[in-house]
Image (tube, rainbow, N blue to C red):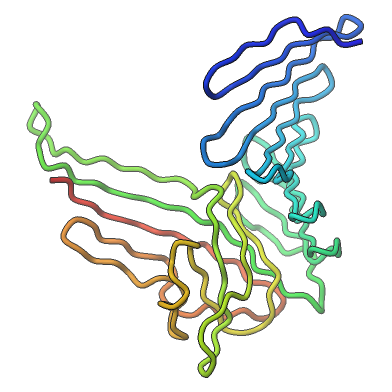
Length: 252
């Protein structure tokens, strides 16, 4: 029988420590502050990170002993299996549709695709990563006289998105809804055609057939540009989309 030896509480983390047959196990529950919860289970055999959505659905699970990272659909089926090493995608990455059909396998090295190993001939997939960078120019110089400039970059994690398949006759409507994971990766099943991909915050009524994403934004205090400038052409069963947003801001 497990015996709870300690229970440590804070505003963000709850940790449980137990022992069974002389073997220590630790479980930590972490509120990630964005509607998701991380459960870290550590044992002698393995360390497992499980992320749950605000609805209590299992979003992903990482097995550190094997280096396998799995992400799941809302129906519980596997969306992808990714081999990770040194906190990056290194090895094979297998994709599945919501019914569990294997639809593609890529080889990656340090988060970069190096080869396409398998693509299902009757399926089309879109895989990408949403990254960002920003530069903010401060209004006051530092005491040493240098300019007050701050820079940031990274991945947009757990961000909701949607795709539109463009039709020059019909008004824009959502083709697929999805979200990025803890590393900024996203994936959805598609078909050949012309698409636009947008943040869930972007109004659907603003989307036109000429758009691959939201138009660059220019103002007195911020200037935002996207790596996608026109409609995204999806063909030949696979489309990889590096989705990057860069903003320059000016503080008063």
